[in-house]
Image (cartoon, rainbow, N blue to C red; front, top):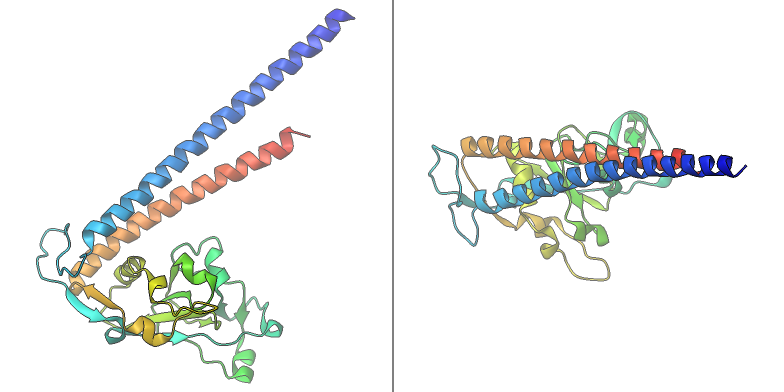
Length: 259
């Protein structure tokens, strides 16, 4: 009887040890991917600091070979325009086909880390006609929160196909002088919240955004910079998704291996 109890305790101890080792290894792998992701994000921030002019300068600290011209100062309103959103009643929401109608919360959807590729709501042409909504067809554009606490998150997302946005969201539509990947990256260097109008709810007007001064290189240098940062963003997104999958895997094992 006693020996049987000893064997049971031994089996339980061995199983506990194996489970502990399994989760220890999984935690190490997760921590490794977390460190890689953190380093990549830090690397990107370092490049943003060095490859864009600072403090009124017209020359960045670090450049690709073959580019030496001074960057030109422009107001955003001179090289594009803002577009405000429209009201989106609850009764019109929930569609799954048609034109994407983006809300600030759509930026959180998987796959939308850099560019808006899917929405929680779509509207059809019957709705567009009945509500007299005008699709924003002048793309590419960048969208961001226009009002409320979401402004402080300073998130921006690229949009490359026709869309609509609700009235808590604003778009900046690029003109032809931009390389789009460069434009998206340049917007990442702008601390938009500092331009918000202070009140009960912080907000932007189109003129607040269009009056922002930026410094732009020629189109050739924009293309080089845009491709470089897009590749870096793709690598960061890949590591982010790997990390999320590992975290989901751990959660699944915890649910299955413990009562």
